[in-house]
Image 1 (spheres, rainbow, N blue to C red):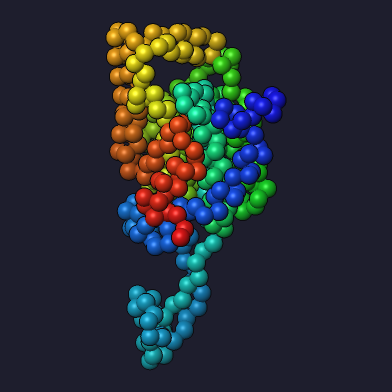
Image 2 (image 1 turned 135 degrees about the vertical axis):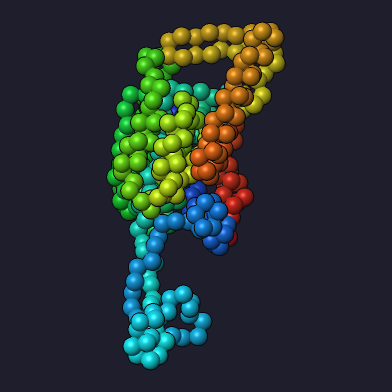
Length: 314
């Protein structure tokens, strides 16, 4: 694949994903104030994860949290004693990036697969910049590449490398071997890897999502913080009324006259209905949902979505 094809809109390169480190420097899944977290309301209005490790017992000082009083030590010494804690660091995060053939489409600006790759890299850099461990699962229709969480720039590079590799393997000439259960298999593998207190970011169009997907996402969110980033193409919202639409799937190409009512109405109902159904399912899982259009820059949309919920550093 030559350099011109790696434009970041259809195909991405490792260098492009690594360069997103600068764009992610002022973005965070954590807000300045806990109530503004992207996950506010999901787990007691603050991001689960970095817990508190016991540090020491010391004399009570004005302003100390009364909930940290150690009653036994206080009774033993005859003076108020509090437990102090240090914040647990190095929280593991898993970034799940979808590069299935369903993602290899775009009617405006970029392909869904390229947008997902960018968001995956941005999320990885955000986690790394927060001082946490970065890992993930990158998947297409045939395989799942796993990267174990580690706080290392090399680990971010390893994850981005797998994203770029799978992205560049996408082609309209790929055989039609889609596994309808692949998304659920990825979530099942993620469930096995993430015991508890992980941050899990799922970046996908959620094609093939169903009742099992809902069950797995609820299981994941029971002991972890899960964020869903749904990728969609504007055509799902506004199908062009005139002209001809070329639809491809593997080696099959079909040209549709969208101005014809018998084509436009069913196709529009299918695309918009599918997008709505998936969004409804994700909301039923009680997992925070952000939606990203292929028509707009990844960083701009991420900044907007995080800004709505206070996740941009001031």
